[in-house]
Image (cartoon, rainbow, N blue to C red; front, side):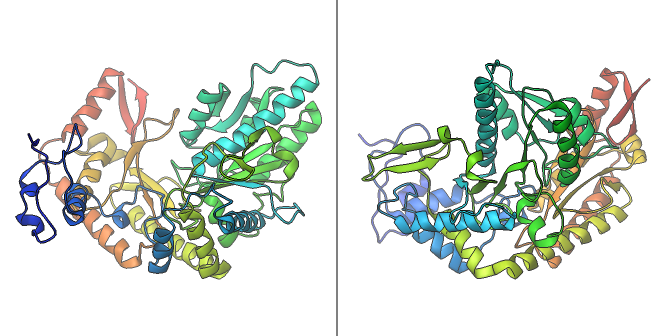
Length: 478
């Protein structure tokens, strides 16, 4: 007997005249028989229909636009497994070329023809690899000194991306967070050094903080760390999490020292699928020199037809993203990347200026240092208004926009903010459409006679805590 999900029809059957379109799609078990590719395609496509269009998703950092040739090139390589280097040796060479290009963008001092780096699925894996390398170097040195290795730690600001929590948990390494405040919106070098000791494997500044869009001052940290290491006899290094900034700073602020020009920066990670302008998932991690990449991180196998050595947490992975990155390097060149990042910055600055002029809002930071920024509600709206930024998020979602509202990290977690990430594919005209929709949403929300459910819930939460609003989300005791 056929189940209810059995697919009838042939190549001549009209998609929406087929029996399948009267049946629900499979949930628990595979259908008994096949259907035509056209109908299967339509059913899968229809399940994703009622979603935000990728280019209207201003919550994501991930690339949502590449040109037709890049897309064609990547689609043609979708069936290539990068790790099969004997079958696809040119992919391996291309990967090495990409590592060289990224390393030189970050002013590597390494003189070897092939620079020390690794491919990753995204910046998260790249961060993991940078962190593991720092841990293994620290452990090896401690073992050589006959000292215990059971209490490693690393220092980072509370503006961290969740991968660092995963890193701490999976490798059982204590994560020491330097609190962010409204006065100290980025990692404070002196506060970071106060958390360091002989068990600190590295300090992790962030270029392009996910929560705020700001950059930690790596040059100031490097200077303070140099004095600290000289005083203590430690050799604590820096790993820079440049998931976003790694592909912004070299093009827009080449004079800024945050990279391998600094003494204690031994590794840097970035995301190729963010401002590297490649579809997900792609990341890169580069070491200052081969000696900083522990040999234990290289794993070799010979069951693919030759001896293949690889650095990474993942083994098999698509080659398409490597082709996409190399294509972008060739297609755009330095000037092309610079122009795209410049335009993104200008659109972000325009939105920052216009939103800052809106009556209910205030921008979190004065300047835009990456193509993203956050804002929050003014005190009078936070204290007396009938709606919250969560309501604005919902209103914009009805128009197809995804503009996230969220609370800031610990210590300033009572601040509710909204964030916009401007990426390639987002134009000035689209910015004006967004601003118009924001203004229309505010007009509707201002007409409300009663507080929204989110506003009521927010007030109840504050009342339970025995506090009242004095600033947006900022509380003080009664």
